[in-house]
Image (cartoon, rainbow, N blue to C red; front, side, top):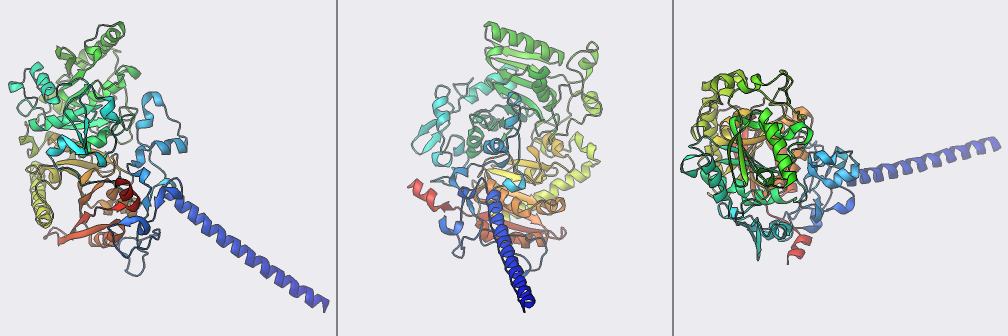
Length: 615
């Protein structure tokens, strides 16, 4: 009896222990999953709120549950878990730029060299630190003022930062007037207006009628340290398009102001990596008191500008070193003059506060330098058009055989260059006929897009557009008659067609859509995604992450045009309610394969907290 009784007790004890282990295991899995979910959404559960409890103006069937999705393209209807809502990030993240987030740098304790601006370069969060939530608009957010009025004024509520207005009050950058922030067109070195300053540069170069476009020969400009981009804003009336560039630094909202105004701009820095533009992209580079040490690291930053300038391109430099007479400024001027002299630049003009250097048209000067002269020519195996994550080098990029023979880029003046087959097309084995066919194909496609959008869109509805996979830039070329500009994005792992896009007189950048784009939330009115979802599926990246990123950079009431396969369209449709997007139109691709065109509009929504703060 005792033996049987002891055996029963042992069995009961083992059973009890198993139950305890299973229960503890359940608690571990449950709380481990919860904490992991909180980490995914930011720096803890305080960084988000459920949409169901705080969202105003959305769908009534949301219940606030955090999304759990493993939906894949092409799954059967009953196999996937579709989110009923995405959570909303805390209001303090309304201006989040995931790959340029200082908090992330501090938390991850990244070892960065502050002296070379490495902390202003891209550092993207690992998957466990991504914010898988919707970025809310700031309190009182309004649909942005339309172009061209937006060049001169924006809603203060949309960018509630007035420190620049006070800090630069003597330079006419911006002025607060009631509910608006006004931009008089001034700058650090052009207090009396960017238009007069631009005309003076043209006059220095003896361009006809003081027009900087020089009869269409100057079209693309890089404005380094652009402030609120008034220089680029006033170039537009001369048919010149500038890529206004500045870091997310102590003047952290300057690029946000530029994009809110409807001016082409990009967050970037001359640090350790090449800027995301191919060689020979710009006819003019400009720096007005941009506070850059051009002499550092053997002139590596000036040599990066040299890589980006076309043959015969100009660098307009307005800074104390160009005119001041104190000992330090004179020393910098002498050293800088010696450096650009060894780079074979010559002074094209010098007046008052500004000097303009010109890059040579051919390699002849480089070949005539003394052996061992620094900076050296770049290695023959260096690809000057490779830019994604590529370190800068302190060397001169020589011209190709074509440019050497042509003694220049061989580009037609603007606007003829938009549709003329550019010389660098041959680098891809493309013929002129193939280029012209591509241009015509996209002309028809864009016309079809606008017909589908016609019930929702007017002439001034959209200003900032992005082509997420631009190929040859024909989508943007087809929009020439519209009052818009297009950020042409070329995938970092595909054909580097961005140089053809710049040769057409358009602008753009390289990017990997598995990561967040270098821009503020709510900066684009329309996103065009041609097979972008199919591409990231092949790379094994998350389509849900891409949807959240598109929502982040899209302005409320903005549009998305998706051109892709039917399974992709079906996948996106399942997320419309969660993202607070609504379908506008669906169409077949008209005998152009099996692509489907799907057009979506983003709703304007506010959290209850932001609405209370705006009252």
